[in-house]
Image 1 (cartoon, helix red, strand yellow):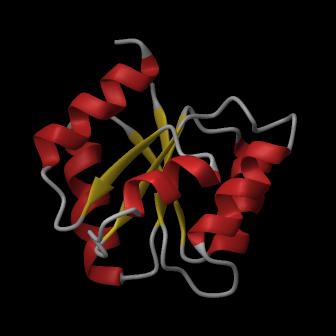
Image 2: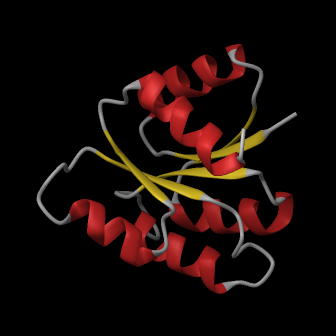
Length: 121
């Protein structure tokens, strides 16, 4: 079963997205800040990470860089999620190490397509 690490500090977003993904058959791991995301990625080695970019403790940009810099987690695909759909955000996400980028509110089918593409499904 595909394991997705959802790194999201907003409880409403986290609950909604995790429930929708679980209904699609994914196992969801949850982190509420960037440091917890790094720790869980290192310990659990999920198949893919959905990373909110605006997080407490360590933001998503730095958490992504740390995950991609670690040989243990570097190959885990990361989709950056942000509500700040401003010019240059996509490039900033990709430069931080994200493999894909999506804006909030989430278009669920688009997100599923990106997950499938990154996992080779």
